[in-house]
Length: 286
Image 1 (spheres, rainbow, N blue to C red):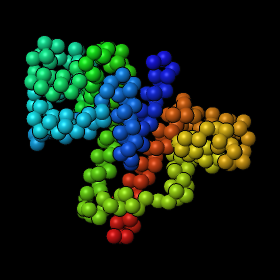
Image 2: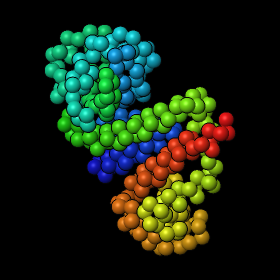
Image 3: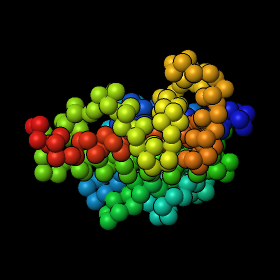
Image 4: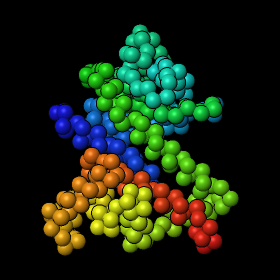
């Protein structure tokens, strides 16, 4: 993949990861994009604790996933090495574990190879008391093996997966406090209207980054995926004016690209959704 195209793909994966805080479909889009970026067949997140393993992968057959969670995770040589790695580290299979140990494992011979998988790369997203969260990608037999270049690309993305997961976990934890199932439902059904959300995000952009009202309108619409020309048409402004406003937005928010600005807006939307879901007025509606 050409360098420019690969960097655009990196930004797309990161955008989907943050959007996945509120939309599980976008989270799976992020995992699919991550796999495609590294020429892999499957990608996912794995949570190992004293209670066993839970995982959320794309590209695996249900029978593979079920067999792994039920039994084979205990004999996964790559996972054992990832568990010992520092948080934030990402490495390809041969750097994680000697190939001879992989090929001698029950996991490799009874599950991975029969399912067409022969290589893995992965890293640690989070480690807490008795719990480790890792991310991984797997390649099919006969494919080019993962290498240090893949590690370097993955290292750009995995911190964003970690932050998105942390935000999603925080929202889930808050939703389960005091109100239980009722508050969890409220987190989904009591989001502000589109108009209200637009106004609140634009106001947060103005107060936090000292944007003007016009600049906040442009920033919000960039976050929604519109181009400067589309924004100009929607707002009844000139393209040159919107471009000038966008340059001011980049300067004030310390962003360098429209993708980076879109991530910022996505995070603000998630932040406001969390505030709305856990506010006393939201809880009183139940």
